[in-house]
Image (cartoon, rainbow, N blue to C red; front, side):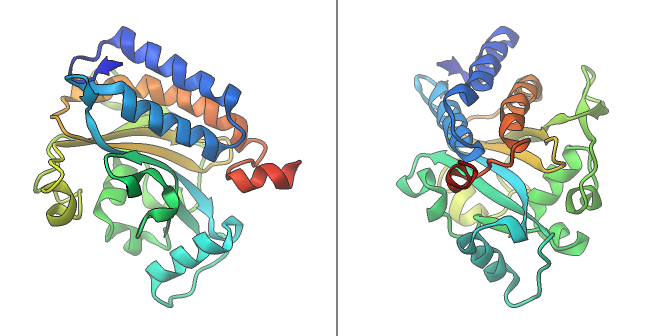
Length: 252
């Protein structure tokens, strides 16, 4: 286990290597994602207890390639508005957290598949919009992927890369973190940070951590290297199109 508030560069490297090697015992990206969020939830601690309230793994995926359940979830968000088969949806692949319902992606009420219809729609989802901006992308590059993403260098300035860090130091009252009254306040969310990158397919993955303790930027920045290793693991499934557990049976 790693004390999150005291995480060192060496420990972040150890964590990155462990996550990178999880693909060896995973059957799909969903399987890998479940192992990743479980590892982060259980291994990043505060006084021996989980430092995170919730850890989630998202990936953009074309609406037309989602199963019926996820397509229905996307349409519910749009409330009858039309959706194209190529529309990217920010899809929840895995989740781990303090509550039982936070440990099964199918129990998510509003985050199973979020359709990224256009710039106006995304701008009305503050956390998603901010995540995209901190990843150094504009919304168009998510809706119509390009093979580039930006990261922070050692001076916390952005440089071209394929992985990055997302960081909101103070979740309370932040305009970028919605559900203040029924999530941030009652569960004591202090900071939100995440990491992710662009996969070979042009789709983007993002792992978001909602923490019980304040996370300084120096700690959040260490996860840029974790993102690089996770990307390698996730890319092995992205290249063959084995994303969901159901895909395993289709490919065999």
